[in-house]
Image 1: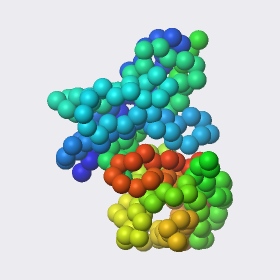
Image 2: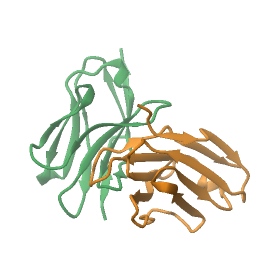
Image 3: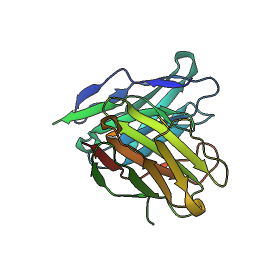
Length: 109
Length: 114
């Protein structure tokens, strides 16, 4: 069965600092991986996805993620966070999306 | 253009009552998904419709849950004899079909069972 682990429930970073959110997956075949963001009172929005090819994928809002098969990881990164990035971030795998438990990101001035 | 819409946005019901939740997908999207988001279980897949194919109901938690999609467009999720553990936000998503195309999510329906 497919599964996703996001080990960090809550992360706090300073505005302008770099960010990395961790995601580990378990999937029986070539994984199809996604990162979604959910802002308060808003729906889920796709940040980026990986199907195949280049293991470093670029997404919206300046985010990127790197697929590492050897580590079963798909970590999300951003070089410099903005206050508007405060939200809940979900990693997901598969077509019928299996989500991780999410990481809540807080930005401090 | 219009995104995925869901109604009602909030629903409060009494234990044992039936409820219907509606989803209007993006026009032309052939795939439609229902998910549930709750504090205890996180985000869970419920059911998936693709075109005229039989729906994938593998995520439905019990036989009290059912869904239909009429005319390949609007979908209704029905929960019979609601229980308190059914309280959650029910999310609908649609995509243009094909494997792993981006799913566009609606704002959800918050269901509270008293």
